[in-house]
Figure 1 (cartoon, rainbow, N blue to C red):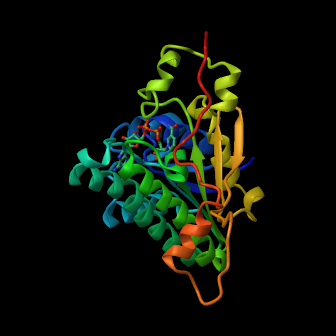
Figure 2: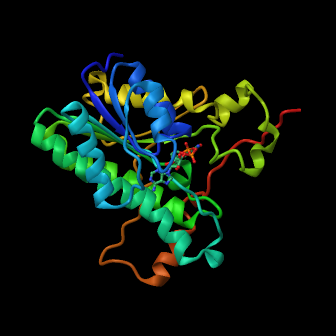
Length: 288
Ligand SMILES: NC(=O)c1ccc[n+]([C@@H]2O[C@H](COP(=O)([O-])OP(=O)(O)OC[C@H]3O[C@@H](n4cnc5c(N)ncnc54)[C@H](O)[C@@H]3O)[C@@H](O)[C@H]2O)c1
């Protein structure tokens, strides 16, 4: 994959997945603007890019990131909205602050950065790429993640909406659903047996789709490339050895009733509908 001549912004790229995306984009030839609250300069120096530190969420930061790309490199081709934060609590313990920080960073940060990118890409008139970041929690729901699951589900809905709105401008918009061993996942209780391991067994890489951040980066490079010009509005999973495609939500059953439904009539048929599961479901992790 050759990204020579392309200019990318990656938010939250001071460590973890964002850093891996920035490194892989630069290795493929792109020039990269590295954003994070901290660590942006170090990553920018390591990959020969430009640092644009700051907290995503606000319009000011989003516009500053696009401006950083334009003033350093003259253009913007790829926006990767990766910055993220967790404040996990069950619903009845979640504070307004927990909710607002997660929504402001993920949902609002994705909105403001993608909007600033879309404005610039439409002005350039040469198409572009917006890669937004979902999560299995957003696809299925996850215990303790009211704020995060809602924000991540909303981000996938952004991708489907923006794929339509930006199609004429040849700007593709896709949601990636990554899974990787980072500061964000290393505290998940079922993964405690993996702490301190340099390599994960094939079962973990395949069934749990869990490896290092570098395992997820090739999807971002692919989506940024000319090879992915026809790919838009998709939710694509990657992690460890696994690449996957998520369905759009679809009707799985229906019944018709002339003149509409009564509560009693619904009660009569509802039991025949297959109950849909909730929550991320992973195989048991047995590393013995
Ligand atoms: N690790 C996984 O398995 C996984 C799974 C699903 C989704 N994700 C998503 O991938 C993205 C990266 O996660 P990660 O695992 O690398 O986590 P991480 O915590 O290692 O990295 C997140 C980075 O975002 C930065 N950040 C936080 N708030 C910011 C803000 N307001 N502005 C700018 N930067 C900010 C942090 O400083 C950090 O460097 C997140 O959106 C996360 O939700 C990760």
